Image 1: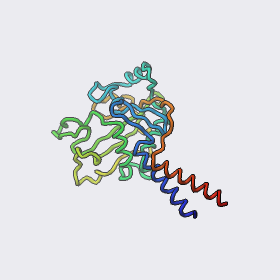
Image 2: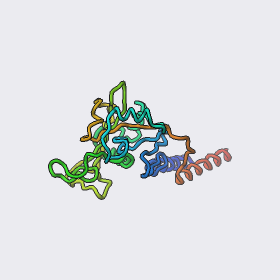
Image 3: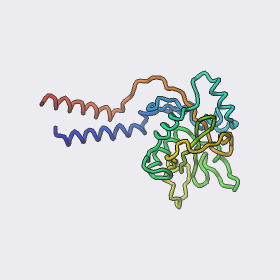
Image 4: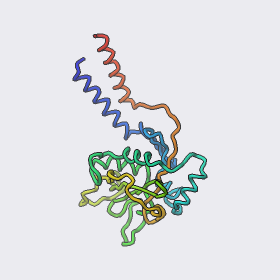
Length: 242
């Protein structure tokens, strides 16, 4: 079997393995749980819409004191993310590492970010100007999360923003050039500092609370597993012919 065919098989295996990122091999999520699991980072992560109020978007807004008390008192291992974990998670969702800010390529990672973390309390009901919000998105189909962790006794955070192009229930005006884009300020993972910002109920700001994931056996998606097996057979055939 020539080198060209081997390279083709390796490319197909790589493509299918990458597609598994969206199909659930590298993370797991159950809508009934308050957290999702990132297998690449070996972390369970409290959904931001739960962590924001320690119980969901309809609960009372919490403060840094409340979050610290929860971290100190819970018996399930939940804690503030380290700065390294925060950076790793932001990079994990970064589907456009070349650009920072709004981009079409970033929309992939941003859509997944909101799918796993839910929506903040800001864009529900009716706005001050009478605009009708869309269950977490504003009247123009926009939403965001600012999220962060404690670093040297300061709450430092960054943010993702999105237009709800992936949801049939969200109307994004056809004149908006950003409807199919996502936002990440990738140049500055912990770029904003405000100790009391997390306490503001009028903003979608939440703490990144995590715990170590239980050790699990890695699962390989069926297409990727088949291609890896084929590659192994190719290698054996080449050795036999040598």
